[in-house]
Length: 222
Image (tube, helix red, strand yellow):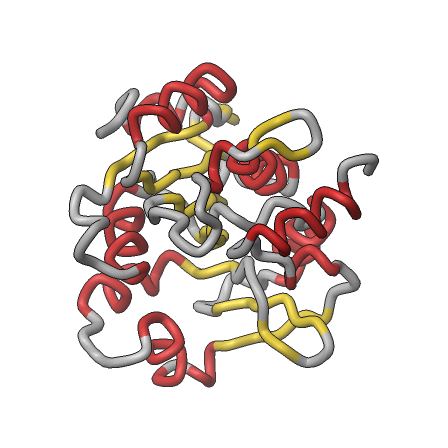
């Protein structure tokens, strides 16, 4: 389900000297799941005066993504109008209609098929709402035009959001091995770059009520 054509995304870009100069970085946000461990619907939970999914999308757009593709599923009819009202043409929603019977890898594939033309994209779950915009920008600055996957790291661990060169999209769509994207990245370890960051937000994903309450306590006044 799209709200607008991919050509609309290109209207964000500028024409310089008669040549189209496009913003080449997008974001792919995953929000199709049922939030079963939370026992409440995570995307619409309140945080910092907005919903959790808005916080997540905000961080990516503020950090340099020209647009975001949000993969919806469970309660999509509630999430999609909210994002449309808030972001208009900067957000596309596409549904994983099989969210009940498929895993996150399928949502990633659904999102990759919907991505407008871009050189790279951030990938992050919708329940990671407090990643700093500076972290996204630091990953962008690390790009060198090579075919790479750039991970932010904290205490030596690879975290979200990786910045993925779009030339990996065919590999993502065709991969049938085990381990999801981690399994795929093991096949391309030579292309992985790590960037240490000072951002606790890359570690915070909200799966349980306790994690959510702790996040609210720490970040509500931020």
